[in-house]
Amino acid sequence: MNLYIGGRSQGKLEYCKSLHEKEDCVILDGAFLSADAAAGLTGNASGTASTDASENVSDSSAGTIIFNRLHLWVRTCLQENKDPQEVFFAFANAVSEKQTGKPSDECVCGTSDQEICLEVISDEIGNGIVPNDPFEREWREATGRLLREIAMRSDRVVRIVCGMPQVIKDAPRSAKTAGERCETAPGSQGELSPLAPESQREQSTLAQLYMIRHGAVKGNLEKRFIGITDESLTEEGAETIRAKVKEETYPPEEAIDLLFSSPLRRCLETAAIVYPGKEAVMVPDWSEILFGEFEYGNYIELSGDPRYQAWIDSGGEAAFPGGESKAEYCERVVRGFREVCKCIREYAADQYKTDQCAADLYAVNQNTAARKKQAAGVTAAASVHLGTMKALLSALTDAGYFDVQASNGGGYLLTIDPVKEKIVRAEPF
Image (tube, rainbow, N blue to C red; front, side, top):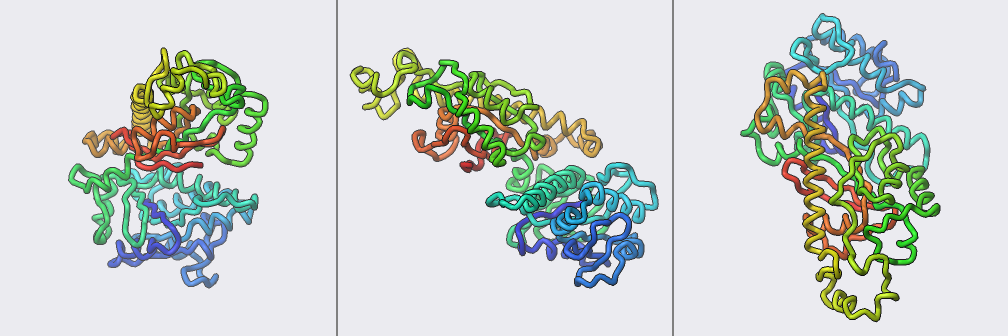
């Protein structure tokens, strides 16, 4: 089973069809299918409802099924009060049985004993502004959850942009299977080997890290240098975080694989509000900068101190008296980032080894490319300080230290490469 995703009208279906030019394929269009896919989907690619798709599946047991516009079918499922995941995988198992003549396992994952020629195509609909309509939000979330499950069980996951493929996941075994069934289209990627283009191999290593600034404390409200002073959130600060959770500012708890936090109370309390069911991994190097003798002072109280004026005159580069310099702090925060990347790699490798759907792949592929694959798809969150964000982004991106800003409860979504320990992209939220 293979998954193709991308924006609307990016050429996903055309690309998929090009992989099977010499085959008779059945194309199921999710825009015209009823929810009950396993019992007998109705509809066809042209939009008429006269063709029973289950008969098409049966008649083409030796060919490939292309399930186009899955996202629209998920919408139909929700409108008919059906569980998209339950119905889809019942359908996929039925396809597997028809194609192989063997009983299907509970999880369709394309094992060596049971291959399935099912190509799934879906638009990516989770980007942009969160819709006000509850049903529209439910549809986006249900589609995302289903795509995540399909991706986990698929041999290949490919993003199509302007008709060009970007391979996100590619199992070496499935490449052999695809080679037996169809000729590879120009630009497509077979086995993810060390000889594959570097840009394609890098695609499979990316992870997401949501950096969330802690809720407000008394020192924030009084505009103080609050570093190691271990204050709790104010009630208003905690309420702001709770409101952002209700507004779905952050990913849902079930979407988060790992949760990190500064060891200071304000960050731990924020993490507990956002993800109450997750245990935070503390990152000591991500605590706030050491303000030294300026700790808990504000600009009014420090305005007559010549040392404070000297710090201002240095453009914020000088060390605080008895504390850290900006350079020292950035070095410490980057050190913490490396530890976070290590945790992500270890988590992904553990999931990769224990995931039943990937166990056979792990057992026979210990090369560098296969190991890089282990870091794919991890989503993490971190409850940190504004200073942590300033130091990390200024050290590892083109952002200026004092240009990085986030209100309490705000933050940045980082796309990171935990293998190369670098930031690929940073977007405020």
